[in-house]
Length: 430
Image (cartoon, rainbow, N blue to C red):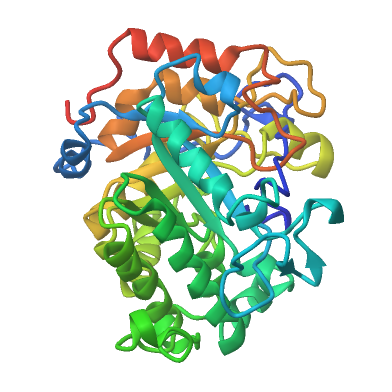
């Protein structure tokens, strides 16, 4: 995600990935540095099954499969969960709007006649109470026996600054963070007693770690912006994470929550690493310690990500290779990424959820919304490796509107998902 300033959400969709032949190596055919230390299992044998407590609580035992998709696709397989973004910015007033007709976001009216509203709470007919868009999503997922998942991605769009350093510095603003925490509370109140997955602020924690390895040294308006819920939390980025998780426990007690872990947070992108000498476990431990201080071990899972765009899109659009070698003989490859995720989970004592896995496949022609990638097929071909690395589930979806999605991939995702469920799925704790 770090490489692009636009992420996928309802207002800012997905991007594609690239590769000339859709194979495992992209531009160079996968001829990265040989991985001298990958081992036969990529180091993914678990010391225990970290996913078991959470899956037991959900009445599940298999590695979960879900994604970001439309209603038509969601009803074509017995998906375990389905996710959407809540993003785009917030209401202008300190408190959530009571009516979309009289609401303003980023200086624009949220009435339908104005052409659209940045605040997710009015992504609906303006005669309905704010939040109906989310309530409808929750109800639709619940009616299909699917767990609704929300990716909350509001700091960047609300601050209006560039992602990275400026985004992290923006959370010191008391007025902005007052709106932010009031909106988070409003989200949680719509969920209430439902079961849901909550994914908090992709990229943000990684950018924060770029500024300091200790989130307690990074200022954030927390107790000063939300004395109602977090008066005892420190005014730091560490306090921000802890406050958001504490609010989940208070307002949505059956929801399961996780912070986002970025493989590039240490300024070394493990997912693109070609050096067999890199201490992958050491890099994961640094990220785990930063997130621990932010409250990640008090959450229920940790969210990890393979790529924010299809590999072929990167190859064609930026001239860079983001392919992982599916033979796991040359770096970067899948087992390196799984090893990083496993160590992260073991350090935090929480399972990982693979999120926004690219939907592209190697049979596609290579065009907007029809780009090649090999991650979807690898994950469906090797769910045992996902389980062994403490994987709770796999969420497939586009990271931007130009990317391949379940309605443009010639039905490949649905075919693979149906086959997975028909086979009985992969036991998370074999």
